[in-house]
Image (cartoon, rainbow, N blue to C red; front, top):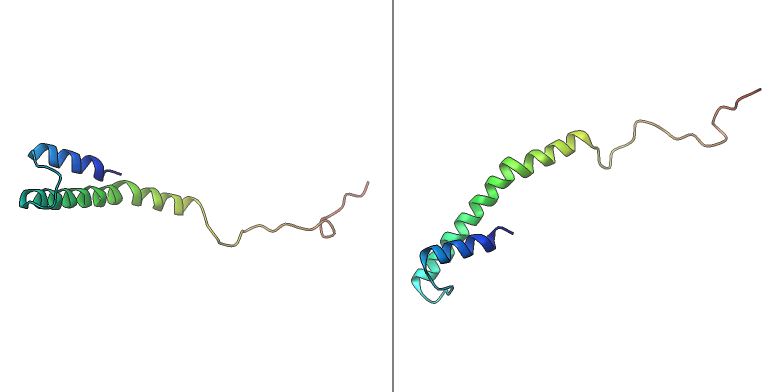
Length: 80
């Protein structure tokens, strides 16, 4: 969702109209794309990837459980 802010800041910072019909508009669009891609790569590398790795270390998804549930017939009874 960062691309909206990047496009706004690039076009307003360069005082270029938001159009692809001019060379300056095309260059500003290309610059906004490069900045957006770079910010997303940095965000993934330093924020999202460590969070995903932490979640995978802490939680197991789709693996067998280490405990089993006994049915009522198999459960030990208490004789008083």
